[in-house]
Length: 123
Image 1 (cartoon, rainbow, N blue to C red):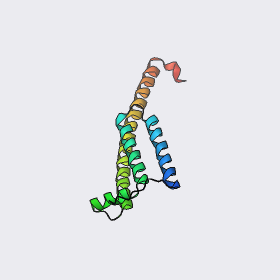
Image 2: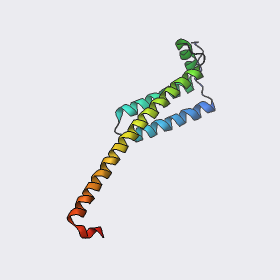
Image 3: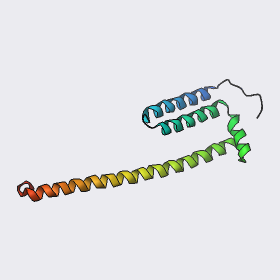
Image 4: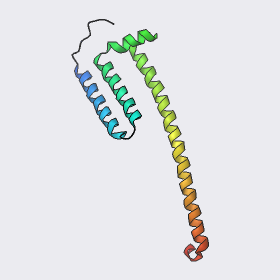
C-alpha cells in the first residue's frame, strides 16, 4: 500500500458515505433489541465507508488474499453474505410456518370443542 492516500472525498464518495450512514441509522432503529445484529450492520457500514473513502484499500486486501481486483473481493464477500442471508431468512420462514400451523391447529381445536358443547352455534 502506498503512502499517498488522499482524504479528499469526491461527490460520489460523499453520496455513498451519506447513504451508508442512513443504512447504519436505519439498522440501529430496526434492530433495537438485537445487539449482535446492530454490531454486524455497523461493522458492514463502517467497512463500506472505509472502502468508499479509501478506494485503494479493497485492492490492497484483494492482492493480500490472492484475488485479482478489489471489486472481485467485494463481490465475493457480498455474494457469500447474500447466500447466508437467504439461508437465515429461509430458516425464519420455516419457523414462522410452524408457529402459524400451531396457532391455526389450536384455534380449530378450540372451535371444534365449542361447537361440540354448544350445537346451536353451528347454524
